[in-house]
Structure formats: C-alpha cells, structure tokens
Length: 277
Image 1 (cartoon, rainbow, N blue to C red):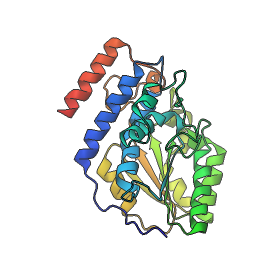
Image 2 (cartoon, rainbow, N blue to C red):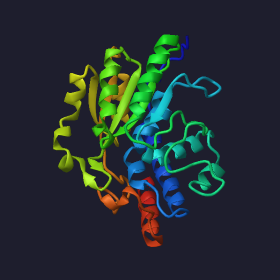
Image 3 (cartoon, one colour):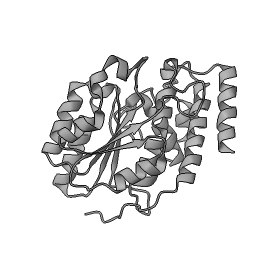
Image 4 (cartoon, rainbow, N blue to C red):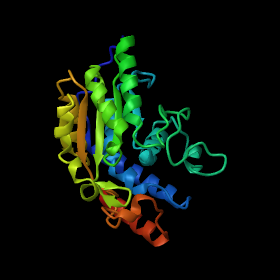
C-alpha cells in the first residue's frame, strides 16, 4: 500500500503565477490553429492546477498513486499545458497540437503521455472514474481518482448513473469537480436547463459529500478537498467564469471554440502580463 501523505499546504501565490503562465501558453498555441476551446480551458485552469500541484501525491521519482480524468474533454488544453510543465509532454508535442504528425487533438486520447482516459464524448468520464476508484479499492493501492466535469455534460444520463453507483459502491476515494461556468456550448445552462440547479443538493441526495467554492480561488479548492470527511465520494461544485483571465472572453459564448485574431491576441497578452505584475 502506498503511504505517501497528502499535502497539507498549497501555495496560492505560486498557483496564481502558474495559472497565468498556462493561460499565456494556451493563448500562444491559439495563434497556430484555426480554433481551440480556449474559454473552456480557462474556466477550469485553477481547478486542474490544484489537482496536479496540490492534491495528487508524488514520490521522489514524480510517480503518483492518484489518477486524473478530464471528463470535460474539450477543456484539455489546460491539462496539456500542465503536462508540458511537468515534463510529461514535450514542447514539440504542444507546438504540434492539432497538426499533422502531432499526437495531441482537441480532446484527450488515452495512450498519450499523462492521459488516462479518452473523453471526446461528454458524459463518459465520471463512469470511467467510478470504475477506476472501485479498482483502487479492490487492489487496496490507496489511489484517489480526480475527475473534472462540465456542467453541460452533467445532463447526460450516464453521469447520473455513475453518480448513483459511486456512493452505492462506497467510492470514498473519488473526488469530482463540476466546472460550473453556467455555459453549455453557446447557451447558459441556467436558461436551457434551470432544473439543474441547485447542483450540490442533488449530489447530496445521491449520497455524496459536497462542497461549493469559487472555482478561481485555488486555496478554497484545496481546502474543500483536504477538509472533507472522506467517507463518501466528494463533489466540489466550482463556480467559474468561461474565458476567465481575458476581459473580452469572459462569459462571451463565442469563445467556446475560437482563436483570437492578432489584435485580440495582443490585447490578451497585455492583460495577462498586467495581471502578472
């Protein structure tokens, strides 16, 4: 059994600097392709950063008993940027994003370095994560499964089947996050599916422990997970902003799948540099 202890401290200032760096890297890649899911990646940047740099345990060799699943597959640019930063993906891998001879597509593909699940079809990630969590329980290997979902994909029936099974099977080693940016593609989730709310209450009814946080507050995300009771699966409902970090992208639906033009790119760089101080 792995005995690595979870971290008890997460440096929010370092997280802020990393997240600005990752947003800039994704913005740079946007100038090499016709379009990418930039707004979707920006909304879950702090969540995914906290998982990799705060929550997932690592030994001296950098190996972890824990697993991350990006169920919100179209948000994968932030996962790619982090995997590059960790040395799991190369700079060339990133530079060849969605290009001939490249390995990285607009959704994660299992088998690529650092990718544990193919999640191009929304609604499958939580089901896979439940299976992984159950396997960890059976093997007694002490691994935690982390999964990020979009609020749009939670409308999928397979997600609710997995939600019911996770608690029924005692998957207390499962931690999920809903990137609750209130957008599904080009529409407001609260307008198209108002009965989706309140979210946390539904997960509690299905036997989960829940927490609600500001999804751009790294310390709050970390605290929500590390302070959990741990006897049930945990759902963290993270309130986020689509396109967070660049003013003209924030809560603007067109940035679901689009690359900035040169003028927009220049403004985006200036805003990120100003935020970095």
